[in-house]
Image (cartoon, rainbow, N blue to C red; front, side, top):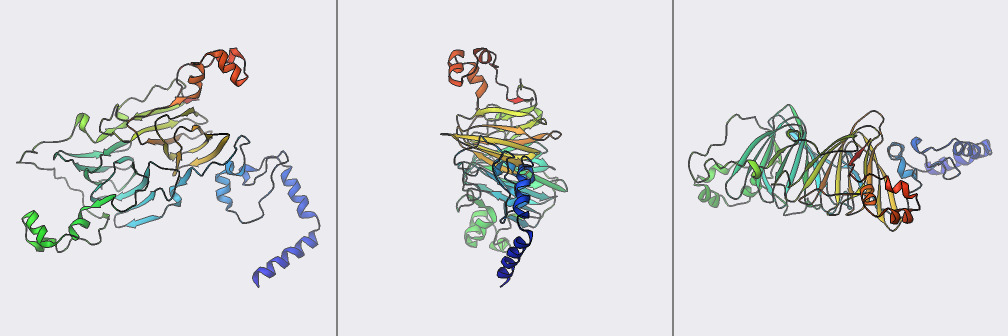
Length: 418
């Protein structure tokens, strides 16, 4: 009944207005491009206003989805997911929200999560069937880990510090400041499937108490209050006690140097950036030997700057945008290309070997993001350098551009361009 009344009202309105409504739409199309106003109108005769249901806020945040780039073509799957669209799991002492393959099917190699811990809160003791990589972006945390040889590491991590726990390494994380937050990355896209994460209290709660008593040499009643189901994150207090190894073969076996699970990004110089425009930190097995299956970069790009056009020959690229606003066009071959808009909290997965760039679309704010590869090293091939190091006459003939232009191309990788 309600729908019938609405349709009747629309018919009456159109009858009363005559051709006023069509005239208004034509005038709208004549006002020039309307993409930044959330309308698919190019101002050159193509497109029209949206009359059906739409989420205007999403349209405004994604002008390139409205057809802003005339060079986009073909069918390119969605390569973007925002953590804001993930379900947030609330826990005593914090929260977590994930991005796994069911959220972003184009990410075949990587899953990730944002996790928040209040002071003293603990991500309970656990291990994974896959490797875990993390970076602190707010507050301070304590990480603790033990490997198969009984070697251990207990470290305080601050902004920009990174950890990497190989597959199977036992570990935990605790918040040290009032509020602490970090990004977690796993080298398995289907991270939520059974058999990927193992929590210690979950295991103990599902083991006969007689076996527990025999294993630990304790009375079975000690385990009467083990949580079931496991809490995942639990409140706790920050302890000042250190790990003690007063006897046994593992005494003093602390992980350090090339065996360390920790890398302090800003204690190391950034990579050379000939094109200027920001900072580019590479973190992979060449400078962080423990990180054998996840390679990463931490990038800061100045306003209106460009991460030069390139592709990655060895892996899919997963991205997390931490600050600012960005645009990227992804070329997947056979005339197929699509442009995406990104802001803080967005993630993306660019296909293996796909050509792309990343542009800071802000005139005033730095763009900060993290690139992740399921690989032991970061590798990319820039378009400009490739063309500059190819016989100039071949490039000129292929692209139909002057020979002098080709001969002037920069032969050095620029990385970032301002």
